[in-house]
Length: 232
Image 1 (tube, rainbow, N blue to C red):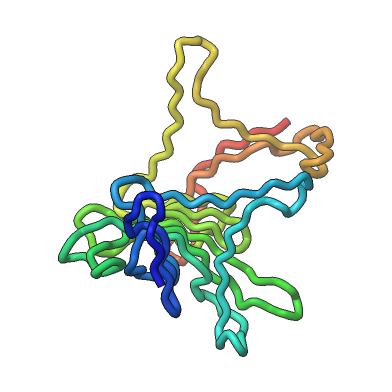
Image 2: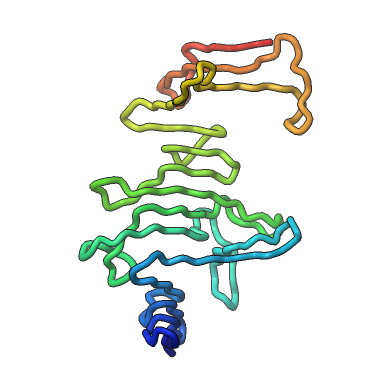
């Protein structure tokens, strides 16, 4: 059940139980626990392969409803997997060893619309959460939805990138620090005809970019109050 380090003669190698494995600990807290007391705990997954396609090191986090003997499709909103960062708190902690740790941040994958075996698809969403100061609830800061839309401060982005701030001004800052006169912050809007792989020349009077200033009209929509538009 427990293997001692033959060289050092100390109990630091491997512990096995019916359902748990401990490396560096005789009392594993989870199905696999890795402990390095007094130094950084590291885990390495290494691949050596000449092929360039689908042969890199991988870590799989899987989820199904049902049971191991009879798995079932996940449903929209189900948590598929999570990477959680925990900090030791002491007696007020809720998680992990002796319930003395708590969440500092997490990256979570959720099921998007319900997976379909017939369509061979399993839509997914990524959320990024952090714990604010003086709070007991970690909050979602950013989300990438199943359509590739990114929301910062919103869980339902309606455009490729949407940034939302509640009860404060929404500020985006571009900073440049350089002694070279030509260096400066740039905001670039580009337009071509056709597709990205083979762009074509834009035609006369084609719209190159638009900046819209919109206000809420009280009927569940935003209307433009002013527009800056650039054309060829």
